[in-house]
Every structure is written in C-alpha cells, then in structure tokens.
Amino acid sequence: MFRFAHPEYLYLLIGIPLLVLFQLYYTLQRKKQFALLGEADLLRVLMPAYSFVRQQIKFYLLLGAILLTILLLARPQFGSKMETVKRKGVEVIIALDVSNSMMAKDLQPNRLEKSKQMVTKLLDDMTNDKVGLIIFAGDAYTQIPITSDYISAKMFMPSINPSLIPVQGTAIGTAIDMAMHSFGPKNKVGRTIIVITDGENHEDDAVTAAKEAYDKGIVTHVIGVGSPEGSPIPIGESLNYKKDKAGNVVMSKLNESMCQEIAQAGKGVYIKADNSNRAQKAIQKEIDSMAKNEVETKIFSEYSEQFQFIAWLVLVLLIAELFVLERKSKWNNRIKIF
Image (cartoon, rainbow, N blue to C red; front, side, top):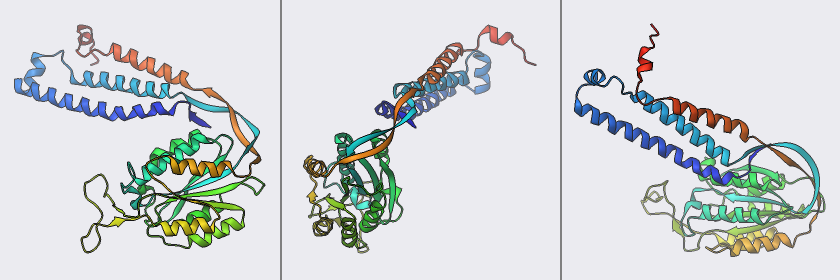
C-alpha cells in the first residue's frame, strides 16, 4: 500500500501553478520590453548570446526540483509488511450529503465544509475502530470502503464536493441501504451509521431503510446541518444564488422533522450541528458507549521509505540547472553540429 507519512506538506503543491503563472507573466513582460528596442531579427544580431529558451529551461528544471522536494517532504512510503492484528472497536459508516444545498453558508464556511471538518475530527478521535464513507445526493456512492487506515481516509476529504455526483437530490434511504451492505461479517461488534445531511429534497423512504438497518443490529444516528430559517444556495464561485422558475432566490432549509424521524426509526440520536464542536462530541460519546469486541484487521505494520529515488532526481535537476547558462558561451559557439 502506498501512502505519504506527512500528507500535509502536499498543500505546498498549490504554489506550483502560481510559480508557472508568474514565470509566464515575467517572460511576456520581457518580450514586450525587447520589442520596444527594435525588431527581433536585428536584436538577435546585436545580442547573439541572449537566449529566452535557456531561461525557460532553467526555470522548469528548478520548478521540477521544487515539486519533487515537496513530495520528498511528504515522505512517500510503500507498505512492506502486512500482519493481522486484533483490536477492540466498533464499525462506523458515515453517509455524507454532498447535494448542492450543502453549499449554503448558514454554517461556516458552509454546510459541506463544516460536515467534512466534523468527519475529520471523528477520525482523529478513533483508535481501534473501523470506518467507511458513503457520499450521496440523488444517488449514493462508496467513497471509502470500511477500513482502519484513518490517514488514507482523511486524505479523501478535501476532494469531496457536489460535482462528484451528477444526479442531484437527497437519497438518504439509498445511502443507508448501501451502508448496511458495507459492514464486515456479522459479529458482536457494535455497528452504526452516521447520516450527515440537511434533509432537504428528500426523495426515498429513509425511515424504512433506518428500520431495516436496526433489525440487522445497526443503529442510525443523524446530524442535521443547516438552519430551519434557511439560506440561499451559491452558484459555483460566483456571487449569484440559485433561483426558482419565478426568479425568486431559493432558500435551503434544514428539514429537522425528517432527520428526527430517521434517527428515531434507527434507534439512534438526532443532533443539530452548529458552529461549535458540540455535534461531533455528542456523536463520539454515542460511539464510545457502543459494544466493542475484538475484530481481526489486516494492516501494514512496516513501511519502506521511497525518498531515495526522488532525492537523486532533485540532485540531477539542480545540477542540470546549474550547468544550463542563461547566455550562450563562447565555448558553445565553437560547437558546429553541421
């Protein structure tokens, strides 16, 4: 299994496209300045040693070295030894609503980001438990199969957004049904489904699905995100909001009654999320109170570092950048290929 020991350093990769844009802007400005001095053919005669191409080569060699250095800091590793261990824990499947209404900003920074923060904190508090993640809107998909690898699970969180599911809606029942079939073999370990949703535009019979889950020994908890008063739904990154056919701004409201019915049918609890950590702590308390049993889990106990190859590549790129001169030297001019 491949992983990064310090994935937080990968956020530095955001700077790579910014450096490319800066270089393109700088090159364009330089060309404009040279254009003011005269025609390109004449300038090549007057300045035979100057080379735009060499400057570009030096920049991209250095950029490659920076990119690889960031990967080096993140410490890429491959699992080299797998062993079976016994842990006392529970199994948790999180069903996360990613419909467009989850982009409403009645929770900060918005409903979806607040939900992702709660999931990340839940993962931080888990030790011997197994967790899986299902995302849903008008349909449901397994994003993370049930696992004990919390680091890999957290790495998926930043990429979750409404565009992952093209069909819009709120198919909570489908998500619960999928979660029921995502658990491991039936045993004495506690199993629970945590649904995080605003409950709006509910489409299927989630109450019946929650009852069926409880009949199989699976408790369903619900975290409601949003406000009963409602909030407009932003359209992408623009300042515009979703409107109905009459041209009125659509207000997305938390459907608390539906969320409560689902939790009651699943013999779980309903908790309304706010801008604090209250909901996450309450759910964690419910998880801690569940029956825990020894569960066999296969995990990688040893990881081999893969930084050596990347370090050599960085060294080669830096040496190459050092030997590529910005200007043509007299020694270069003596070389006649033809």
